[in-house]
Length: 275
Image (cartoon, rainbow, N blue to C red):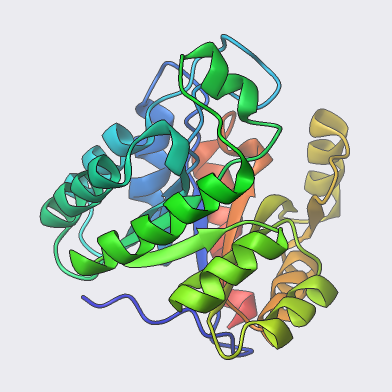
């Protein structure tokens, strides 16, 4: 299998899902991955944090361990990080981790989402004794890791909203992933990328119908950048992002922890509607 390039085209956007890993229990992550493949989703991705954002000390499963298990028990979906932060491992160790994951998954299935981290994740590094050098140093590490993972046959993405991340993606010809971006922001980034591919990621809350959506919204509440709506409404939002240039839309369903199978089912309906 070869993972198609992340070039945006309306009606052809690929839809992935993040796995629920902010837990000590890997069962839900495996359930979502298996269900995603069966439901026709295009990829499964894992966030790379040492604890859930804003919850120091709370459990979080390690990205590469989860992806190794998923790669060994699926056959079709792309598997990737969104994103692996370069400060947590050296470029050499990251490259070996992605090469090993690719050996388990098989050719063309692994996406190496890479990022420099930001001030919101800086405390994680410091709490675990990992350095947090200046942004320029971190971005240089992203650039070198992009080239290294490409050298072992893995498709690299660069995650970030900053101009520095965009420059690394453009100069290294790696897909730029912009988390939580509006269609307008994606279109502006596409204009700056000189033909480099673009992808989107963000939180979603999808209701099968208005009453189901209302129940979900009452349970989870509003979030900055959240795409919330019925299947048709969320599909329209993803289509707008495809029109703006995103070849992948990677959704993080808020309800995946509490209802993993239901979250995958509604997201698969979104994917069908987008196509």
